[in-house]
Image: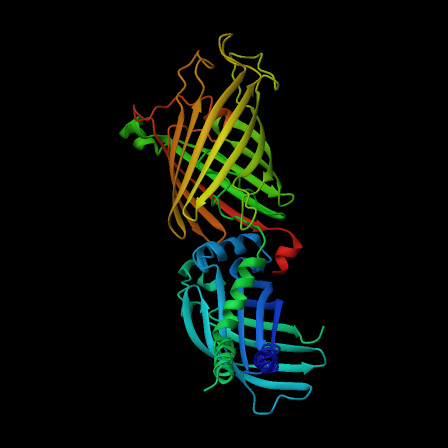
Length: 183
Length: 301
């Protein structure tokens, strides 16, 4: 009989675990694109297979993507990106892990501007970044967006002087992820 | 403390663990599903250009891309100071390659050697992939036709048909590592006319090419074409061996080459190379290729 008394306790504890876990949402179809515009050439690279997870209980967030998932308009550019710039064979992934904070409590539906803070690893170089974004809480889903700029040189990606004029100093990065919270 | 209490504490302890590790595990979770979810990916950049040196590679322009290639070979290094060690003479091939689809490419060219026109079709049959269910090799089929238009007053019987040769090649390549690619090329050549009855019209050869990256934008290349013996006997034909150094800058690939062949098309460098490395019949030269995007889709990018 003693053993039976423990059963509800176990259930209760499992419930705590469950409720903790149920605040995590995963998306496999997040979008990250980067853009460069110069007088000589425009670069558009978009990845629609970004893995992103958000934990609304802990306000933590993480992204991971395969560099080879970036699709360019020009195939040769894509080849050069993988072979010469991000070196995808050596560094196949880029990832971000961090937290977000909002001045307001995010318990109702609506758009919340947030500050995302964390570590971005790209081309084998990890750098702390802090960028503004927004989180929109909808019924059944959460939409996260951000737009910011990154310097290739900050991540050890060197750009030869001969093509320097064709690639802008800073890349415009756009992020957009929808997490389904109710099936 | 009773067993019940102890086990409660123990359970509590274990139950809390995953929660505490959660921030780190978010990324682990992602990375696990990222590696599990990734499908096969085409291997790119097996070779930088459409030619190892003289030999064509499995690479072809992407759909809607036009590749212009200028191939240039000076004269023989051993031709003496009077000819400025070969720099006085030059042989040139101008070529245009166009990607009809991502698998099919078409090309035309004109060489100054024997005033030769050439055309080819290249089809990427199999493309090497990585990831689950990887395809280990890339296979391309290459068919070429060449026609020389040089006038010979002593050979008035040379009509267009006699001047034509055909080549079929199976290009088998593998990018072994990110720095090393190899290619094997079984070759069949048909000459409509050969100099003597002892020479065969159907000629077989086996070529090999290798590319080794030395930096992100430079590589060293070598190729060798082995002509099977007792096929072309009326003239002393040497196997074509070439060394090259690729330098890539954006849409250009610049290749510096040394070869014992002066001509740059299959029917000529495989079956008509009379130069020998041992005697110093070495031709210095370069290939420059430039990629243009003609399709609207590519232009908008």
